[in-house]
Length: 340
View (cartoon, rainbow, N blue to C red):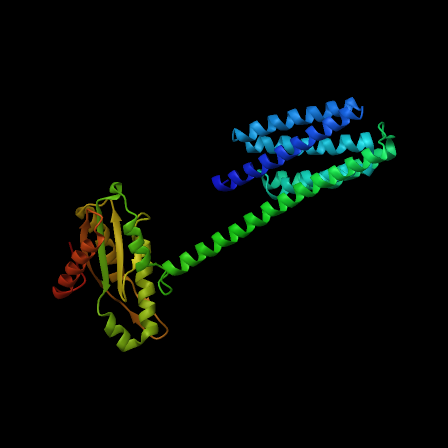
């Protein structure tokens, strides 16, 4: 689980635990005052369990703390319903335990499914308890109303907080998805599906000293203008796609590729000296030369000329300018070659 998402769960759990502990302190004091020490003692035990859970959660063991909190709320629901009956609304605390556990707690899908299936079981147990056993404790009307409203308040608080947390996470996830989708669209060339110039420039600006040296190479399709003029732009686009596919097949996974200009591609070869670079680039050159590009009406073969230069500092523009100069020399000296 991502750190930020786990941090949000940890924060939510801490708020819920502290809120429940404070409410049990108030209830424990109240039951001690009205002369029901047994319930006051149970409230004290609840407070201790919640404080232990809080420190477990604070220590980063959110998953364990989630288990304890889930089981604690379920036990509170069952025990309170047994002691006072369903009129105090404690049986609905099954929802306060199950909903957060299903929606945001640090459980996997199988665990969440089991928790979801437990909800009707525990609700039915709670509803059946007053039918099977006479509640051992009877409350006065004023105490009953106080207990009733405290439970409603706690239940509403936990459900509202859980729902708000879930909605916040979902909205954040949608925003991140939209941002990533926009980044992908804005950094990918629509014809070749390679990265575009914007991506390449961003790649160069993020290089660290450990990434050098890098061999930068510009790859130009020979006579591409003639192909467009003779066969049309659809065929020209087919040639671009085909050459891009060859580049993807021949390049190493560590070699960023992009469409730099109209019919010019750029490939970066990290941690690559000129000798190794020439081998990689010649493999690409020969693969393009041997590729037959089939369109609806024609079969075309093309070649590429490459100009490469080393990038040894963060000034990538100088390296690309040097590669462009070598590319022009390759064009003048006969094309279908590599100039390093």
